[in-house]
Length: 605
Image (cartoon, rainbow, N blue to C red; front, side, top):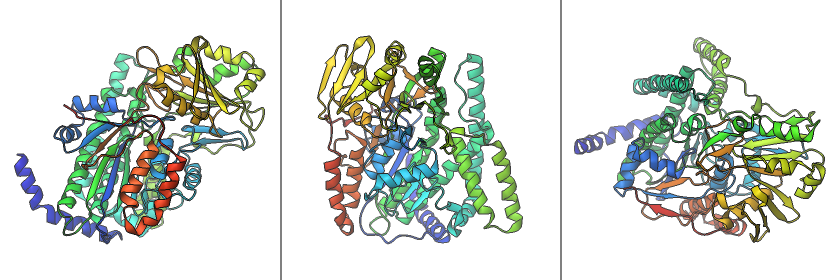
């Protein structure tokens, strides 16, 4: 059967290539002139830890990846993403080579009294401009799909940093792609099939949660049917665009599949509900890899050969919410210890489905003005129906600058930044202790808190349970008062460097709290999640990397190392871009490798 499929694949290779080349011309994105250089494709499975990848492969949820690794076609390794283990920090480092002053998914600017949330397009766009600061992104001339940042890509589809400046369907090419996609009976059937199966899965999960009386809520606030349709449509368009780019010869492609991360937050990182989302991702990877291999076989005549990388930006740890154990949120607990203070603590569950629905709604509004009146009326009716079903996202609202709360709490999973608005500058730990004499003691009495961290002049102090303390200087030297508060979270020197860097970011909190790693392997999270990330422990900081080329990447001790790898192998190697080599040298000075090599290739047996 395998031989027969390969024969059929070879016989249909020519017509398939011609079809995609014709589609590319029709949407105004023709074949690119090839320069003899290899391209690369990065497929990100958001939030899948290395250990959970292995479990999913062994359980049969990722059959294609498992087969390719077992047969030696691909290599697999884990790597260290560090602190904070969040998408904005890690993607910034991979795409632009720096995550400087990105202290989490949420943070606060005391001087401006502004709150940052990595789901507000305008804020993410400004953040990207700051991160670039003369840097070059690794996706120059390429494409970005469903990412936080665009990496200087020419085409950024469903990418948060590029939503408002240019709507995709605002151009004739965008409309053409939409119509070509919708007029394909096979794709329509696939979207309908995926919608139906996704809807039935969601109903089954809700039924199981009800009979088991589990506190976890079903993922997403949209109706199950609408959520399944939005996920299916985005996944299909995303995969279609990637394959089209491969046949066009786009030099670089970075795409993010994030359904697993969202379902894991609601049900747990190894729950069948979360793992089942990986089956469809595995099928999409198989489609993309087959297109890559077809182009690779034909690259001597035309087309660009591609190397494939599959990775996660961070992992997820099994979690228990702080509020379930303490009976109140972290901000409420802190406010109760301080007396008559006002509190600013707003956070919502990750709503990837809702965010996609809002993106689709905005695109449909732009599309209405480009269509014939009769068709525009249909699109308008669909948009209004969709708008009525999208729940409000209070966290995505722009911050009211007239408000000034006494205490501001910003959480990213098990990582919390606490700000005190007594002065617009960051406070040292000793100042917090003098201003609020009993607060630190009350916090350390909480079994749910793993550590409290603050600045002390040019050093960082980490307070742990039972009187433990670690003092870290700018050279990474650590003075420990037992019991070591860093010990539960990994190798001491590495964790100490990560903690120091985070604490010294200008927009990190006056206090930085880490949820405790419990004996059963769960992590206390400050959000209502069954799986969490943002801090350390339980696999959050250990994502995975799979690569197809024979030569492995260099040791990966930080996400910035991936940036340097892609820059040197695929951009600086191009003689037309050789003048950018100075950027690589500058990055080596700014971001030296820290800690020992953490890149350990593995073979799945």
